[in-house]
Length: 87
Image (cartoon, rainbow, N blue to C red; front, side, top):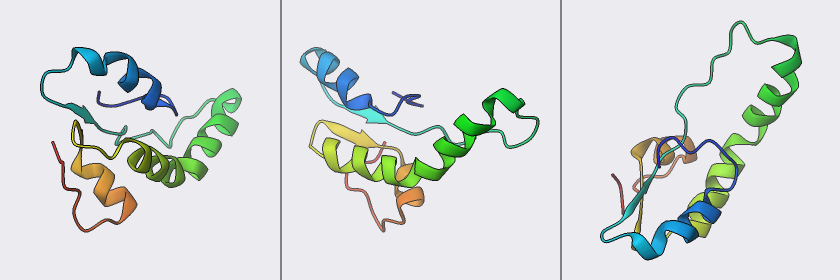
């Protein structure tokens, strides 16, 4: 599940969990273009950037369980030393 492109990957994780035999790997989008943003998209871009770390922290807290693994890019963004279940 990388990159997840919405603010609520928990819903999808819950729906697919019964079909998982090992784990689900979750990773955020690593690059959001900053140049050449169309005027109609500027507000959405700024809102996404403003809430990015808080949203990642909420996702990490809500989904931090043995069957879920996280990309190391989440640890970097959240300034965590180690995420136990990395993928």
